[in-house]
Length: 298
Image (cartoon, rainbow, N blue to C red; front, side):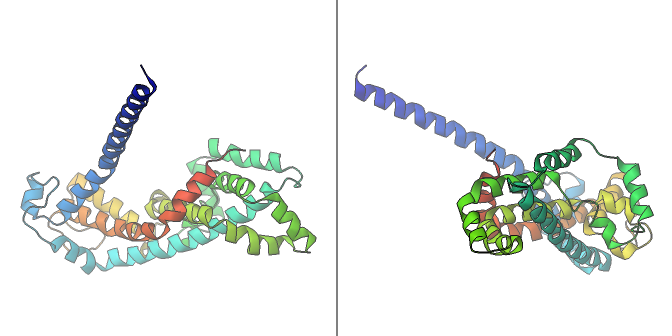
């Protein structure tokens, strides 16, 4: 085969490979989008169609009564604001800890940095367990307080390693040496050089922390018992799922009267998902950049 024939064959193979890749990505995207569309359709459908399992990807009998009940339920609104406050505090503290730990560990002149990094990595594979953690939170007097939902999970060894790798690969060593020669302190370098040049990875890890905290509910289930006002939205959704599964009475924790827990559960899931969906487009650019930077190995 001549050179032109080989070029044509190569182009055809490349197009077929591209089509297969796009097809695979499209199918993977559908597996993420279709469940959300199904929940959205159920949340705006009439209860009779939902009970009869006739709602799939398109709503039947358009009805916003479930959303009116969600917005009219004071306990759900209160839980929503509790989740917002906890997520903000948790994300700020988590990023401060991660950044302040990753920067010194990324410096080659830190004595024992490999050993400290290894100790952090060990926590990814081994933990004390649920009972020792509960006993620790109880001994510190954090039960039924907002700090029981913030401090235990505020440090992530996985995020620390991503941040450390990013700082080592994206910050030129010559830039830091120039700052040292100009008399800059470590805090000055961190605030004026490291943070401005690390916006992509900071945005990525901020999203990781925020989404992880927003979706968590098991710690609130264990640590928040008496103080009902501190129960986050995710715990409220958990109670709605239990109510729907066990077909209990149409009232959850003193909420408004519900006619069909399944429809209310769908509306509550959409209500809890919208904030993250609204925030993500504004940091998508930084998220992609930060993920690529953090994937580079030493």
